[in-house]
Length: 317
Ligand SMILES: [Mg+2]
Image (cartoon, rainbow, N blue to C red):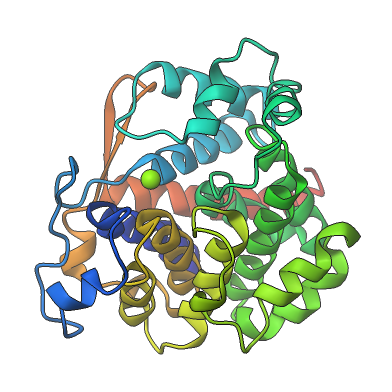
């Protein structure tokens, strides 16, 4: 339970911490906050209040609430919630996600229709929102959690690369929630990855990979996931991992959200600095303008963990 809360809160905190640095250069975070523990890092800026979570966490909350209220995976319901959210004009929304949610196609065809015309749909926008579903499906084992990840990713991303990256994240988080080492489990996931995507993920998730080796901007799914695993692999605490992720620059809120999900599961909720969790809040466009505070996010994580385990015990998906 501590790890499940760590994952969901850890991702939201990474998102809020990274948001003011989005599209900035590498090194910007360390030059402003040179030492871990120095304080003031949850600074706001770039249109974000201090502690305000962005679209990554907002969409993750919508996924989590759908799973709880529908008692399992109801893709049409998740899509409908995403559409309400997009229509309520969130401060930030991925270009592709917005197009898919507003192109008028039904839930099971919208992403594919977008991919057919644009041919580019391997952004990190499905990976960024995966922590809540990863917690919920963790108890169902590797195959079920990876399949659920693909189906939720496919709602907005027509490119299978985005599905496979999200599926790998689900599996690594499952391992971490069980108390295992997600970095050590990376190689075991490749056999479960679609053959056409296996080689590329094996390359970017290799132990020798460094973010400087990335061949795309880290708004793409491969370097985003790989940077998160790199940040986890090369640091020894939640704080250090998230700092390293944000200091890469680029899509800082999302890379930190993905890193924070994994690191929160590995180190647990108590490892997340209180000065970062205390100001956390998640505005929720499309849901009556609710704003989730820390305790609400903790409650959501606990309910996802409990309901996921209960559904697992019943053998339902
Ligand atoms: Mg964002």
